[in-house]
Structure formats: C-alpha cells, structure tokens
Amino acid sequence: MAPLLLGLLGLLGLWVLLRAHARARAPCPVPRWPPGPRPLPLIGNLHLLRVSQQERSLMELSEQYGPVFTVHLGGQKTVVLTGYEAVREALVGTGQELADRPPIPIFQLIQGGRGIFFSSGPRWKAARQLAVRTLHGLGAGRGPGADQVLRELRCLLGQLDQYGGRPFPLALLGWAPSNVTFTLLFGQRFDYRDPVFVSLLGLIDDVMVLLGTPGLQLFNIYPRLGALLQLHRPVLRKIDEVRAILRALLEARPPGGGPVHSYVDALRQQGQGTDPDGLFSEANVVACVLDMVMAGTETTSATLQWAALLMGRHPSVQDRVQEELDRVLGPGRPPRPEDQRALPYTNAVLHEVQRFITLLPHVPRCTAGTTRLGGYLLPKGTPVVPLLSSVLLDKTQWETPGQFNPGHFLDAEGHFVKREAFLPFSAGRRVCLGESLARTELFLLFAGLLQSFRLQPPPGLGPAGLRTVPAPAFTMRPPAQVLCAVPRPQGTDRGGLA
Image 1 (cartoon, rainbow, N blue to C red):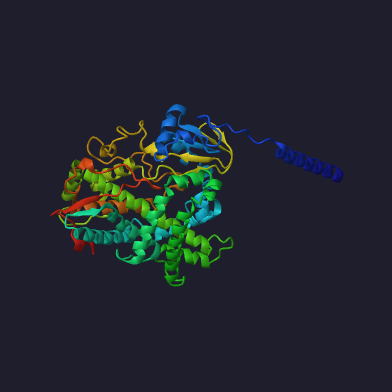
Image 2 (cartoon, helix red, strand yellow):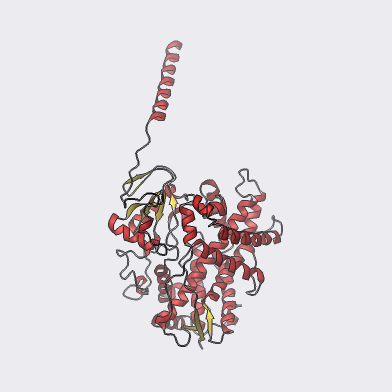
C-alpha cells in the first residue's frame, strides 16, 4: 500500500510541476488596442492636439474614432475615454484595475512617487486612508468644519466691505477657501496679511501656472529633451520654496501624542508609530502635505471665483439666487449646510458652475495589470485618460451642454435633481477625497457672498465684457480681472457668523 501511495504522490507532484512549467511558457495575451489616428514618427499624434485646448481636441477625435480610442503622445500609447458611459464604466466598473497613476515625469521629479495624488500601490492606499479618516474626524464638511467655514466667510465679507462697492481683484475670493484648507492641515488660520499666507498663495499660483505651460507639457512627453533644455527648473525652484514653508510649519507644531487637531498632527503621529515599511517617513509626510496644500487651495478657490464671475456675467441668474436666499433664510441669517435642500435653485446654480467650467478636465490613470476595457485588451502600465470634461459636456446627458444653464439640475417643478453624469470630482477609488468638504464649503461661501453683495462688472463694462476663457494653468482657472461687490440691505448678519 505504501509504495502505491508514494507513486501516486510522485505522479501528482510531477503533474503540478508540468502545469507550472506550461503556465510559465504560456504566451502573454496579445493586446487589442482601440482604434485611433495613425501616428507620425517621433511626434505621434501631437500635431492633432491643440496645446491650450487639448481636451477639446480629444473630444473632436472621439467623434471620429469612438468613445474609446488610442492616441500617441510622442512615443507613448495612451487610451482616451470620452462620454459618460465609457468613463463611468472604467472608473467604477474596473475596481482596482485603474487605481494607479502612470509615472508622469514632472510629478516623479517633484514627489518621487510619494504623496497622495500621484502615488500608487500600498503607499497611496495608506496615505489616502489616513487623509480620509482624519478629515472625517476633524468634521470636514460637517459641524465643526462648517463653523470654521462660516468664520472664514465673515473674514471674507469684511475684506469686501473695505472696497465699498469699488472694483476688487477676483483672486481675493480665493483667500477664504485657502484658509479653510490651511486650518484643517495645520490647525490654525492665517491673517490675510500674514507673510506666510501671502507667500504660500503666491507660490501656489506660480506653480499652477508653470504646470500648465507648453514647456512642462513638452517635458512630460520628452523628458530627456526637457531636462536638456532645463524646462523643469522653474517649477522645481518654486516647489522647493513651498516645501521650505511647509517644513517650517511642520516643525512649529507641538510633538505628537496628544489629540489630533489637524492633518499634520495625524501624519506625525502615524510616522511615530509602527511604520515598518516607511510609508510615513519625513519625506512622505512633506509630500502628502504638499499634495493637500496644492489641491485643497486651488480647486475650491478657483471654483468660487468662477461662481462669482458667472453671476456677474448672468445677472438674471444672480437675481433668482438672491430672491431665493432672501425668501428662505430671511434678512441677516447666515446659511447652514442643512439649508441646501431648501435652496434648490442656489444648489442647482453651484452644480452648474462646476459642470460648466470643467475645472480639471482629466488626470491620467494606468492599468495595474492586463485589463479589459470597452471590449479592448490593454497591457499592464497603459496610461488611460478618463476625460471628465467629455462627461460634463456630453450631448447625450445634458440638454444644452455648451451653455451655462442651471435648469440642468432642476425638474419642471423647480426641485433640485441629482444627475449621474455630474462627475467633477471623478468617481471610483480615486474620487476626490475632499468632495464633502468642497461641496459644503462652496455652498456656504457662495450663499453668504450673494446674501451680502450684488456682484457686477466694473464701471463702464457690461456683463458680456467679463472674460470667461480660462487662463493657461494646470486647472481651468478663470482669467484675472476685477468685479464690484455692491452691499445689499439684506446682507448676512456678521454677528451671526461669530
């Protein structure tokens, strides 16, 4: 009996070895790429993409090649997804398969694969989980977080009061959301005249503009040529200045171990605990703070500026918002997060602002393994661009996609309607981790601003004279210009914001 059993075990072992050998020799699946324009030597399809409106060029190509197509950015094959159906299927339906970022050269130089937004794998998962957990614990978008936004609203309204209805720079509106972000990150707000606050905002502005320049786009496509031409140097110098300020703020915080009052506190405590893989080393802590500072200030600040600009451009829409605010909130009562349901038109306007401006048209992903997408088979490491602007402007989802129309979010009775194709914060595992905070923050600041002031063009300029073509930058930020904030008698009670 024993020899028979040994023989059977031997045959089983031999079968396992043969199976393993066959799998090792089995050819990898042959990729099946989506269609796309024929590439030219060296430049690929770059001649088909307008530098300042790349997302529009990609949307035009999708009309010829379909919602899933391939473009060659220099020598790099990239798959582009356009329209609600294709983008949502990829972001929500593929799970982990599109959770990674491709190694974008300039962000590899800046962050070295660290941080939150351009990292992948275990480091990204750990950093994101900590950020989500900390923001929730700090009440971001709820209770304490909303109170902080309202206190910042009071400071913003005070700044506008000083202009007495005279023209003010549109960028001033970005101070309040930036300070909300800094309070969450560092546990303190800054006076608007504080040199650190002024320096940080100026440097962030410089970095965002530099990241959107043609030179940096060229560097990302041809990194060796870009390095030879030193195209990356200006932005790296600015980033070094930002890091110096962030390190000083980190060192100013008391040692960890006590209650968590800020994101920085949470990061430092995590780094001082059990961290065998070094996921929260000092370099990664600084990288995470850098990501949160850049993203947390730019996106909400630019959106609030766009909202004010579009109110000056569309006075009839502003009339309806202010009529609703006066009717629902009454004279002087500041808005609260729970008021959103009772203010459907105001809520619809804010959603339409975000849809219409398409602030961040796309941020690339890459396949974590061989991935089936839209009927095609993509090899591991393929860059994939889910074009969010194509979703927010999808003709099959929006009645008038190219027009500013709050009716997109209202039914026939004037009730607010959620739209599945409203994806300015992306979707799936890489959805914006500050979405809840951003929604609450924008609503409170926008409603409080329009309660207190009538926004209009400067003297001698009509609404149509306000410029709405985005300025060149990493995001689709509004062009620099001035507005007038004329005080309204129904303004917010500043004492109620204390």
